[in-house]
Length: 605
Image 1 (cartoon, rainbow, N blue to C red):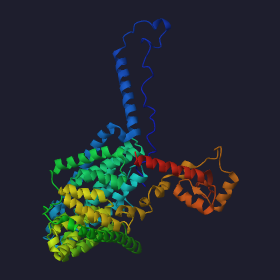
Image 2: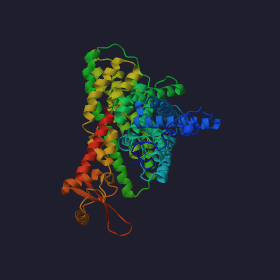
Image 3: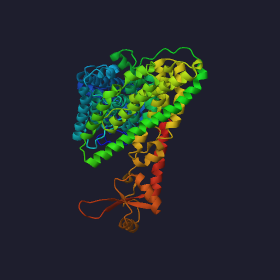
Image 4: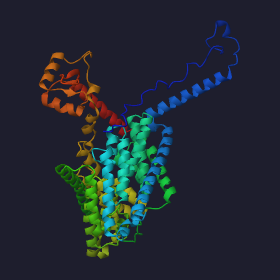
């Protein structure tokens, strides 16, 4: 739960939002409050200073009213689009800056700032550099976490989704900045993860800062978050359409009409900012698709989707398994926080001695797979090694995202499948590179839980509708397979393992946002709880702490059958708990119903 950005219960009505005194008249003005004899007299000239003050007061009042309307109605107001545009430019600039920082740090360590050739360049280095650079990076990340982030966990996209659902569009800003720095160190020292996840989280930090400053309501805060995320993704891939859909599909997890316009504006702004910095270039060099018996080949892409869904599940479960193993080893050996990322860096460096392709985000290997440059056995080997490298990096708490690894694993899986398919039925098959493209989309969509935005990213990268149809066919079956093995996506599964069950829908997690203190009846309430029954329940140990949520209360209601539960606070020392009120089951259900109605209203507005 974010500790630095306070939760907002809505902007409310500002006390200073109104204009000056009603009527705007003062002594001496015609029709003003002067004496009866003065009311019909000509108005006397007001001093210049008074006119300035009156004009400033009127302007201030108008601005305050407009701002209050903007905060209450948010994206329904055209003014919000201006904020979305500015936020899109800033978030796009942050994505550009993050990429620049990683490139400069990588150039200082490896001697090259081109992320698209890092793997092949690393193969030319002496073996001790290949090992020592990831170890140094892991140590730096570990010391950073040990000093400033005692839970030893790097924040990412899961926390952004959690902030959108539970915390009015806010994320932890201080810890988020530290996580961004940790991810930058990981990526620049050869960590086998991606930069898109940290960019999304960095964009969310920016939107949270704005939401806190303007005291934005939950809906406005979430829409600001969507704008920032869309701009960050659009800037990363030069794909404004996919950036907007990603924010709606993955982060906000709804397609509300009111949010679409500002998010689309921010996404375009982010993409334009990236193009100004880097030119109209794309991360991947995609081959031109030759003519083929396309429709006859579509069943093969459906089969490829089944394989890619299974591979995506293996990738996700490998990361969770590595995290469990890392935590168990750390606990058993009583290792400090800084030792875990350093150990992961050592394992990663040793693996890179044999397979330097795993170093960094892997765009070079992904490009080569999309060009069909690997054979079947090379693809299978690299898939296995890359999955292990990603698991080691993230299980070692080094930081980074899963987007780029999913792209690389998917492209290699698709190429391996395509090499077999085209060999078995050459007269009915196209190029193996198209299978690599479809595999890239299918694995990525399964890992991210983003079938629509992933398909759109591929379409924006290729501009080829046949490629988009092939990707969509593979994505459909891949997501159908993977969603039955995990909670819809890597992000939602990661949250579920921490007890945040967003995948089950709002009826499962909204109770966790409602505090018992907010719905309890105090002792002076006209229908307060019976004092004797409340005392007896407390004596029996049936009560709720003051900071408990209704998620904790409902199982107690179910188990005890009580009509109400006392809410207590704990005085200092060994004093018994003091009753401050009681939560009635009817009030709890009424609060849940109101929250569900508000959620549905936002999603369908």
